[in-house]
Length: 442
Ligand code: 5AD
Ligand code: SF4
Image 1: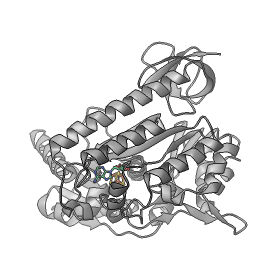
Image 2: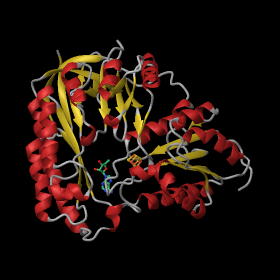
Image 3: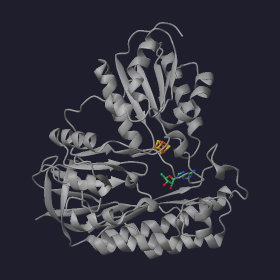
């Protein structure tokens, strides 16, 4: 590498989960603080951060092809973009990336991105650097403050995973479970609300495993944090994602019946409806245990919208075992769900298990599963027609005078009339489609 000029513009390209999107936004803020401006849409940036995801598919290959494309486009334009690789692929494959892709000047893992400005200085001096350390919590302390935010904000409260599901790479890329301190979170939530947030989604890979100590020194769980945040008068809505069935507590379930600001929506991944497969996945719950848990949520909050994650074609999954997943779907009636073909992740136990399922079989199972999930999503939306509810306005719609926002059940809702971004508007849901509803103001 040689000495470089300071980049004038940056672009952060984030892939994967909301947590990665949150990290991407924070990296953008760090770069902005260095006096680097976001590249205008459609223009090449001087510095590109690829904020990668490692959870499924050929993530690593995608990173190399993205790098290749950036280098090629740069060459055509007679310039050399500065490239940083961040996120979970950086964590898992950092050294290999450095060895294989000389165009990459910085590799920064998800727990180290607060060091990006220092790494940038190194890059300017012509030195490449890798930082994939996992210091607890340090990155959050180094974050700049956000002055103005969208009405819907995200707040990372917990990171990492100790569950070691046999298919999953997260415990290796994001490290052990850590909870950010209660006081820091309350403080950051206040700042978000002051900056314009009306809804906060608490984020964590195992968000319901969050634990802390309140101001009086008492141990609190996620329910306690939710109750504390509900006291912020300008905050209207609280959500949290993603949860694990093993960490669910009576207190959090009860909060759904007691805290009005806690929205009636639960994302609780199950992955499979078959107990043998669940065991092989090291999920620590059975299908029945999961269904019982959902019943308790429904008892606390009868209108709660349920969401889940599924994997089809886990090694050894038979047709009959897959059908148990379909049965579970029928039993639950999800409002929304995410389903994936199993993807072997290097270094995870499932990747080397016998009886990997053929791609065609996975394709066919995924189609059948998604047909049911789509059916249920439409049914949920149709059953909402006639309901009166609040919509938090997020942006303008395509048509003049049209606004888009979310219902309490996380449905996309559009309506016409006088409103502004950040308003909470009372509507009656009038028409349902698979992905959105039309509403009229009341
Ligand atoms: N293959 C397919 N899907 C996976 N997920 C996690 N790891 C894998 C994998 N190896 C899915 C799970 C998880 C979601 C975030 O991604 O359903 O809940
Ligand atoms: Fe992808 Fe998981 Fe990393 Fe999020 S935490 S970026 S989903 S691998």
